[in-house]
Length: 361
Image 1 (cartoon, rainbow, N blue to C red):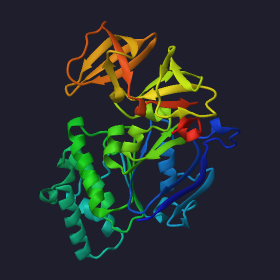
Image 2 (image 1 turned 180 degrees about the vertical axis):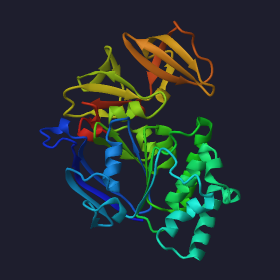
Image 3 (image 1 turned 90 degrees about the vertical axis):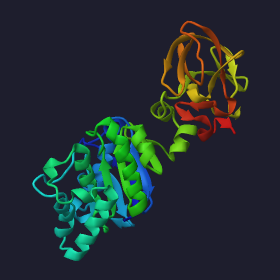
Image 4 (image 1 turned 135 degrees about the vertical axis):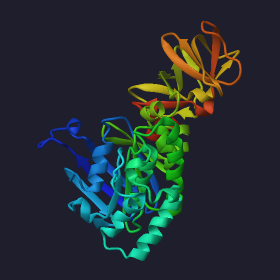
């Protein structure tokens, strides 16, 4: 296990990048502590796989350094970085038994037979596949094949980091929650440094203690699942995390207040100096309620998802989502929307204004 440091990291697939737009990764500085559970979260094309390939040694960055426990590994090939990787598709040997698949990484490194026996038994018990050890891998279901692939990544106790590259992509949806829970349990038991790469917010937030959210080659926020939900530092984080995502509404800042559609909106704090350029209000649907007073709106759509209703209402040409417990109005109904002030935030040029000196908490 190792602490991983990414310092002044940038990468371009072009031989002579001229500007920021030519870089797949734009200035990454990051520390991952030894033994932590981390996720890289973002849409396709945001730079997750590029960053993962740089950490694993499949790519050498255009600029910057990668350190494992303060040892510079930037120019080392993958086989000298002492890492394990689990991919989207199970990497196992179908002609081998489950036992032999789990034992292979240890045998390949000359580990003593008694230690192999003990370690394989331990990992098999964690994965709940002890009864399958003598089964040929070709006969396993897809989720059990991926379990074995995970086990091959975890069976060595000397790796610096275990990296998971969208490992649940090919798993049936009704089985994903089982493997997500199992992976979290495995981390708590083995305490290896783990990095999980995904575009699925549920997978990232379920697994990781710290989530790194990426957009267009940049890190826009690092935080716990609660921090990302409760206080998005960027409108992209608000959109990307949550179902539905955060309402982001254009506003005018004047006379020390924020106004949407001509109505003053109470914020979490007083607006300070520096809120120039594009200004927007961010409020999660969980903190929008139907009331006798507030913004006049017309219900456009109501979605009953079982535990609550999602009401989509229109204020002028802007859609606002609210999560409503119990009875909900019908489409076409005239309602009033109330925003919870301590959860209503000002964003300045996409960034949370209080983080950029635009609002006084």
